[in-house]
Amino acid sequence: MAILNFPQRSQAAAEPRRLALFPLNAVLFPGGTLGLRVFEQRYMTLVKECFKHDGSFGVCLIAEGSEVGAAAVPHPVGTEARIVAWDMTRPGVLNITVRGEERFRILSSEAERSGLLQARIEAIAAEPSRPVPDSLAALLPLLQAMAADAGAERLPPPHRFDDAAWVGFRFCELLPIPAIARQKLLELEDPVSRLEIVFKFLAQRGLVK
Image 1 (cartoon, rainbow, N blue to C red):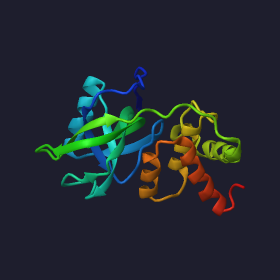
Image 2: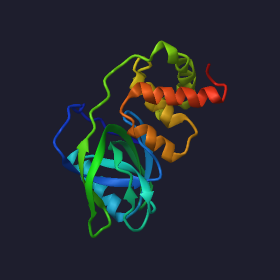
Image 3: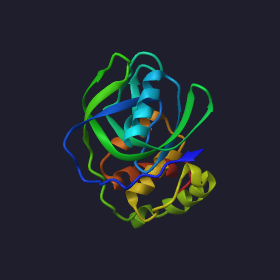
């Protein structure tokens, strides 16, 4: 698999801008990775443009519709995705791995003739780095074990176990919860509130106390 290296982007908030969308039955979190299988022409063209111009696209959970065919209706909050690896094991099918960058909110969207969704979006400011509260510290050994089990491909370093936002996002990726629950957790803008919900979920199942 070819690995692509890109310079770090600024986390500063920007003015509203346009971004092509890739609606999926999955949720991408900032700092997370997601594997995609691309075969529809609209997304093949999008990926080629990303390769050509070091571009990105938005991953959003589908609210109505499906991943193939007519343009789906996305949930209003998604995550900007940048391609970090790719391969083509057979003609016409491209496998890519994307990494989540900043979250965004859709202000408006429209479908091109090809069916590709183009949106006007505004960035959601990155959550400030905060330590995991002592009251939720029992989450850390569990996440460390889950990270070791997942491996570096699923959960690439650096691992920031001292950052409440990073810890919360990783739990949201790894826990066996419905996609709509992941979406609601993505939309939260307070990392401690997100961790408290994760803690309650795990405590109810006897996994932390």
